[in-house]
Every structure is written in C-alpha cells, then in structure tokens.
Length: 196
Length: 196
DNA sequence: CCTTTGTGTTGACGCTGTCCACATTATGGA
DNA sequence: TCCATAATGTGGACAGCGTCAACACAAAGG
Image (cartoon, rainbow over the protein chains, first blue to last red):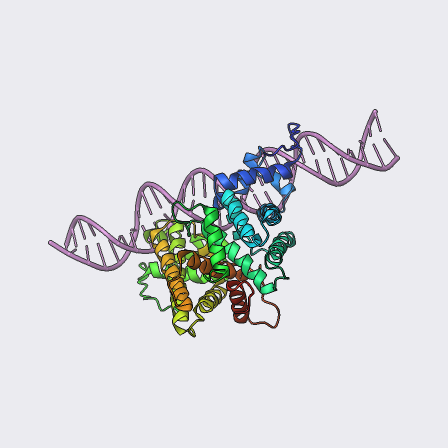
C-alpha cells in the first residue's frame, strides 16, 4: 500500500509525518473514526505518545490532514469518473464514483464528513476542488454552463446519497447492485420521475 | 422551554432521565457535539458523575436518545410543512423545513447525523418515520405514488443540502434568503435545469 | 416496622489530549 | 573537523473522560 521512507535509525523515524498519516488511515478503518486516538496512532507508528506533536499541532490537525487526504482522493476519483463517462452520463458517473469511494473507505469518509465544520483553509480548498469537478460534470451533461443552484443540488444529492448509504440508513433493494441503484435514484430524481 | 417536574428532595432528583436529556440538549448547542461529555451533562443537571448510569446504560445510550429526539422533532416539522404546503409544492416544502430545523439546532443535528450509523431500533424507527413523510410529499407533489428510488433521491437531496448548509460547506449567495436558495436548488435539480 | 428496590454518591481505574523538561540526532557555519 | 543550534523523539505529569464497584439514602409495600 504505502512504501514510506522507512529509515528508522533507532531514534529518529525518517518520515514520521507520513507514517502517522498512514497509521491513522489504517486505524480509522479498522477501529472506526470515533475510536481514533492520537496515542493509538503514535503506538501504531511505533513511536512515543508525544512524538506526533512535532508534526501536527494537536489531534484536530491530524484529523484535518486525514480529511484533506480524503477529499483529495475523492476529487481524483470523481474527476476520473467524469472524464471516463459516456457523454450525457456525467452526473450519474460522479454520484456513482462518490458512493463507491465512500463505501470503500467508510471510516475515513465518516471522519471527513464529521469534521466538515472546521474552517481549515486547506480542507476548504480540497472541498472547493471537488465542487468544481461536480460543476464540470453538470455542464458536460447538460451541454450548457450549469447554474450555481443546479451544481449545488447535484452536489447535495451525491453527498446525501453517499452519507445515507455509508451508514446503512438507505439500502439498495436486494438483488440490485449499488451502482445500478445509485444510477436509478439519480436519474429519477433529476427528472422528477418523468421518463426522459 | 422545558418545565421538568423539578421536585428535587435534596437527594432524589424527581425526573433525572428527562433532566439529563434537557441538559444535554442545551449543552450540545452551546458547546458543540464533540465536547459533549457525560460528566458535563451530569454536572449541568446538578448531579454526580455516575447518576446518569441509573437511567442510561452508557454514554452511547444518551446520544441515541438525543438522536431519537432530534428525528422525532424533525419528522413533526416535516409533516407539518407538507400538509401546509401549496399543492405541488410539497417537495420544496420538506426540503426547506429540514434545512430550517437543522439550522435552528445545528449541534443536535450534527450529533444525530454523526451517530446515524448506530443500529438502535428506536432510532431506526424514527428515521423510517421521517422517510415516510418524505414519501408522502413525493406522491402529493407528483400526483402518483412515488417510486422507492425517487423517494430515496428526494430524501438524499434534502439531507445532503441540509448537511452542507449546516456546516457552512455551502452558502446561499448574498442577499438571497436561505429558504429561497433551497427552493431554487430543489426545483432546478428536480428538473435538471429545464424550465418546468 | 422493616425489608426490598430504586436512585444518587464516593472512590478508583485506565485511557485520553496536552504541557513540560530532557535526551538524542541531524545540520551547517567556523 | 568541531561545535552550536535546530529538529526530532522520550519520559513524566496533570486534568478530564467513561466506567466499574461499593456504599448511602429514600421510597414503597408487605
């Protein structure tokens, strides 16, 4: 997965900053975002409880970094999905990609969503980049520049669908694959049930 | 707000269960959901740190109760909004009502969303009741029974919009009122930008 | 009246985030 | 090359947290 520059000299770690991030990414999936403690991350990275403070101001800063990482990856996935989509199908593609990513990294996604409220500029920037991808998908799908309202709506639909699916509050009907379900939901919603 | 049966006898509290809930509801707004500690709730209720354990199995149980309370109230608001809506306007009405409620109780809403993942049956039931209201709004607005997919989509749109607005990730343009913004987003999204 | 049951208190444990002082290592100018 | 300085990791300590066990008080009912 992660090949960190592992030159532990016995005392110094080599690249603790990255090591902590990697350990945290693992722990957040195995133990859940609620259980993620700074000390546990340090332990997993093989380092004393206070070592992280040399690289992150406090626990919140580590969580910010995790959220930023999540949004960066997600943006990448969305952008790839949009450019690989059949013409006219871009909106469905972003929604599907978002859901797929979140279901693949539920712990990280939940953590990122839970800490959305923070006003860290880097996190905000990562979010804005995601929104830009969504906007692209809207203009690509409709053939004209999408209004701010429509972009917001598509973004909200994707985000809401993802959240509800991740925490099991919404389940695709049996013998329907998640992708199909998302596609159906998005298409019916965008046309209010009217056949296109 | 809350007139709890306050018959503190000097030792017994009278109705600690309700008192704890009330204190928690206050604290979750004033101090934020992340800072909400069982001990702080007990303190606010004027009782020792362990007293809550006579009424809630653990901290998670208290949070469940809060989430359930939130969903119950929200369902009430949504139902009222649907029945008060102009015919054909029911979907916009639910979305607006959801956003309005969440913005009025951001701490509680965030807590409820963060703990959606739990599989407490009472919480699930409260959620299902909300979904039923949304379904009603869809059938009322379209004039025919809404499909499961469409209901899910509207639900996701409302939930996503609410979440993004609550944590400031989405801001209505200046000099546009939140209600108007939500209305515009919902209408444009449901018709993919096509004028109706 | 006395026992049982519900309720609140006190004390303790391990865990957490964080501060401080200190130890160790890397770096770069003389 | 040597040494000062900065970067990085360690250890100890503190308050606050969730929770358990033992105990104290009050209400209820035979």
